[in-house]
Length: 203
Image (cartoon, rainbow, N blue to C red):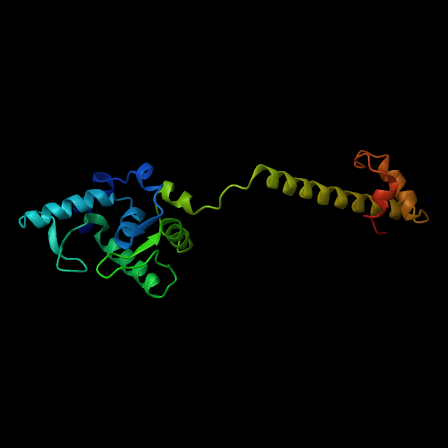
């Protein structure tokens, strides 16, 4: 058992409500770090407010960004600080763009989808519901149908070419049109005419 094992696992005590957060367009940098660790930011905000009101609160452990007190985040504390620093650096370097006009004194916000895509590229472990937000949106059925048809057509052309080469090796005197007629009558002809098949074979 490590020293970290004695600390509380905040993802167990304060798990994220994914149904609430998945509809957000933008989030603050601290919230992004917390969500990626499966810790509910609203619960941490409530505890921070309690800590501000009660300096004797057990989890109180210093300052965060300003003079405001910070709750110790248990087993995830070190990883939270790391992720927060890396996200802040990405924002400073404009790798993660902020949204809207940043008024002085207000926390910076980044698009939730941008963050998830960026964090996934870094292979950060994240809750499943969050990782899925960065996945490519499903293609419209019409587009999927067209792409599937293109794949089937390419496969058919490849089968015609392979069959044509086989026939040519057995009957070298046959012309391309004669070979196309043989293929058109076969199971791989797809009811296509010899003229159509001839356009897509080369022997």
